[in-house]
Length: 106
Image 1 (cartoon, rainbow, N blue to C red):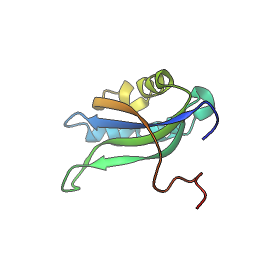
Image 2 (cartoon, rainbow, N blue to C red):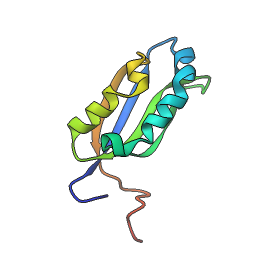
Image 3 (cartoon, helix red, strand yellow):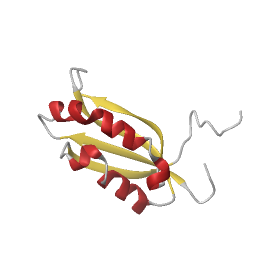
Image 4 (tube, helix red, strand yellow):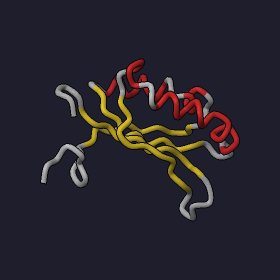
């Protein structure tokens, strides 16, 4: 982690019936996630979450690195999934990496 930054966990839950929209704009969403120089938020881990029986996507989980909470809020607000109305709810939590921290030396 760079000095003056911290990690944040972003939990986004899809609205029901958004599978087609999610699939249609997935490539644009992924490009956005990789565009850190433009927005200053670095995605360290990310992927889709699934319904309990794994029979379809139901959201997104990201671990991001940023200077502040407001930066992460802007990042999520400008995400193509958010702009397309995919998410029903988004929760952002400051997060401390413990197990599996890639910067931790054992």
